[in-house]
Amino acid sequence: MSIYWSELIRGLDPYVPGEQPRDRQYIKLNTNENPYPPSPAVLEAIREHTNQDLRLYPDPNGDILKAAVADYFQVEKNNVFVGNGSDEVLAFAFISIFKQAKPILYPDISYSFYPVYSKFFEIEAVTVPLTADFQIDLADYPVDNGGIIFPNPNAPTGRILPLEQIEALLQRNTASVVLVDEAYIDFGGVSCIPLIKKYPNLLVAQTLSKSRSLAGLRIGYAVGSAELIEGLERAKNCFNSYTLDRLALVAGAAAMRDRDYFDTTCRAVMATREWVVSALKQLGFEVVPSAANFIFICHQNQSAEELFSELRLRGVLVRYFKQPRIDNHLRVTIGTDREMQELVRQLQAILGSN
Image 1 (tube, helix red, strand yellow):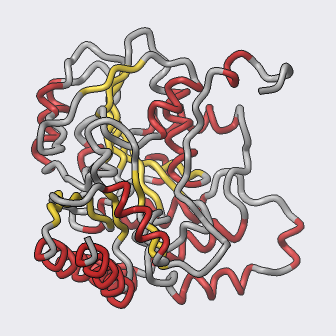
Image 2 (image 1 turned 180 degrees about the vertical axis):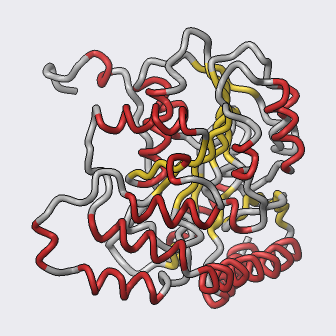
């Protein structure tokens, strides 16, 4: 710890991303990356725009991407904010919307960036426990708050809330912003973006990292009322006017326009998820119902930490969270059929040897 660090930085526990090892070839089922490549239209857009124009700054407004997102969701361009991955979009939301006199609320088991941002931006936060079966119960969220944020589907559990429950929350929670983090919504859920036309305090964040296979380009966006979007823009332009580069903007726009490819790959991931859930249950695993591109599992006779370590030795990476309530669960990304078959094979071998 350096004497030159600020007091704030000294007290932070930074977010820990999923492991990206380089010591050998692994089947990577630990970071919720899409197993399928980006749309061919995305690759063509990148090739077309990899030219001498890269000497120029990108459009600070990201208009080409905003227009593609607005067209996809049938909203106005001033209802869209774009940023360097949904993590950055969330960061701007924390500083521009959630820095309030009252504490913000989020689930106790959820995306681990929320407490990091709360501490980094010095925002008071209160966690609301999930139910015994890892569900978010929005009835437990008091109206007296500085804002509410939760993922839908939740991470790392994968459980999803129906649209009517979110709307019921919006109907009673009108004095603060409700931010729904829909990073995984495309793998079995229904987006609440259409509700922004009825509820000016609703902000919805999504990413192109998961369902559109662009984790390597870092593209995220938020959709909400024009006044909420203006707040995000003000925060961004106090930090960095050029958060998305030229290639990311055209690639993101191409990804949003190629709906057929998007639908095909999402359906493939969901189909694989269904059969692997069945296969794991036959091995004695309990599987939390998931509407994401991952599943949350535990075994009645084998600790999650031991399974995690043994799988890693066998060349299969999954995610283990050593924290209360979930320290006997593993989060497993849905890969290709071949990758998931190998996961099942290795688990059979591990369980059979014990």
